[in-house]
Length: 307
Image (tube, rainbow, N blue to C red; front, side, top):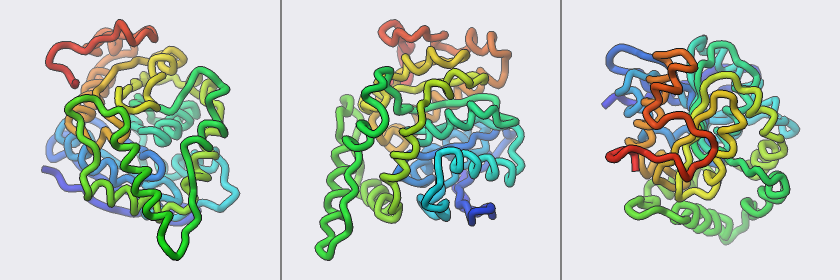
């Protein structure tokens, strides 16, 4: 299997660390993958070689202040993060690529797509945090989800994060989908502990009203909803806000890229293959599960699909 390489890009704010996997055969496209908070690009290590096997060059940067990427200034806002990703795209010379984002990385992907970044031709969003009821967004959502305990001499904060991550992994998992193994659990704990401002990043991201950005996306966009992740419950509602939005359900939880890497890779690669091979209207016809009108109750995967 193709190996994951680790590299750095020199940007104005400092160095951005990223992982890259090149296909062993003919390259069919490039995918820029943005991770959830408070993880790092390590969350994509299991799925990147699987996408590369489908001909996709995979590039997964660490968000500034997470993983091994230098942080932005303390007063940075959401558009500063967007500017940094655009600078990264330009530094790597990416002029023909798709975006993949998960959780907070999906929100970052939406905002990049709404800026009409040159060369972007498709987007795949997995469990985009979105709720049609505005009273359930923003600070109320963040404060319920995030507790940022201060470090203490007894390492209580470490135990707190360990249990919080374990609870997330077990939350509403569908039958047959495993939670985190100890190595995965430890990786997520380390990423969280070294991301000192992860709660601040949540607040920055969720202060942005995402509906306007969704409506501004012009490229084909897939919304993937995992039934064991409560953040993915409103993907059909978000999909109808995007002119070329589509929606599909997938069995999985909060850490679906670790829990079901082959399944999520198949969904993403199939969508990108059909989208890149046809015009916008043809892509809707070629996508094997059809266009979704926002009613997920009528959206069915075929027998033998990605459940």
